Image 1 (cartoon, helix red, strand yellow):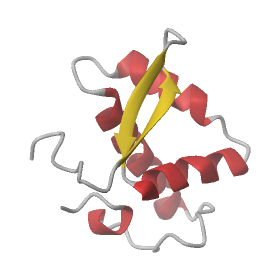
Image 2 (cartoon, one colour):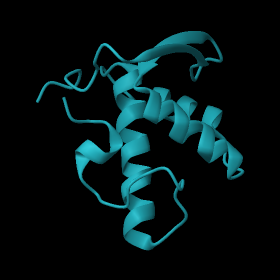
Image 3 (cartoon, helix red, strand yellow):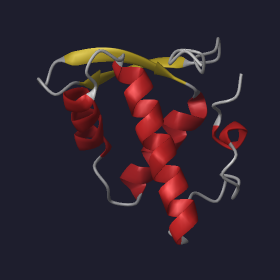
Image 4 (cartoon, helix red, strand yellow):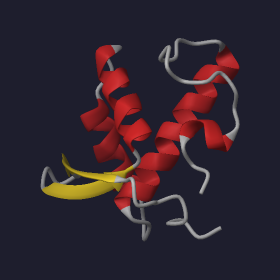
Length: 101
């Protein structure tokens, strides 16, 4: 699968700050933005996550790395019985987190 296959017409573009503290627009499905907002509500620092993703992205688009990072966080939380948003299904299927086409 191509790294950009998950991006669909329902993606929402927003400004974020990259690792150089410069604004950059990334487009993610709404569920990803909701999950990112939830991490902030839980006391985590999504801005730091995005900057870390930028520092590690290599040749990949920032939005792809952020999407994978968020999915990996969801999967880890699910497997370890850690808190998850109430609106998010409790199965590790890719479709449940909005990655399916």
